[in-house]
Length: 174
Image 1 (cartoon, one colour):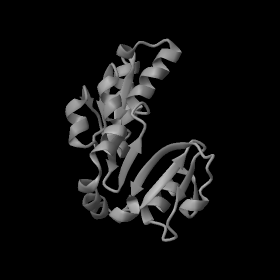
Image 2: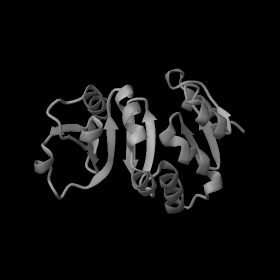
Image 3: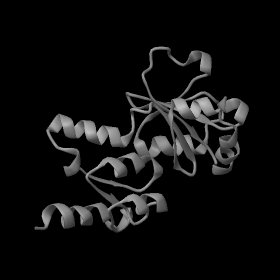
Image 4: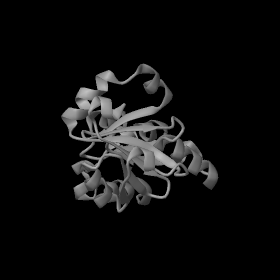
């Protein structure tokens, strides 16, 4: 489907490998591996190992390519997966149970922390489920408007220690 829609796709495995199936490796896939320290692997579709454990599949491409492809996504695909535009150049397809919000709640249960006591922070669409499910939510100053509107508090930007400032204010102050 990605090939038909002319948008570059990448697969991220549970052991932090990033697979691309096009020999014309996209700028955004290279950038993703640089920032996340994942191994980048090119394999034709027929040579991708069958036993890999997929964490998520995503489009990583120029924003205009993703913009052009989105209207052509089949509705059943949107119903089957949690589909999120996490950046202008990323569109993610994930298991609907594998959201950041569900992860925060499950971690809280594991640690014996009630959902109402969980502090969450985010800045992009892929953080929305976490912002909505946590007990107290913080939007970074550089967050998209949706996150700022849903959060309980807006802090400074990522580049200005916004998370540290929020933790000092809400965790360490009396």
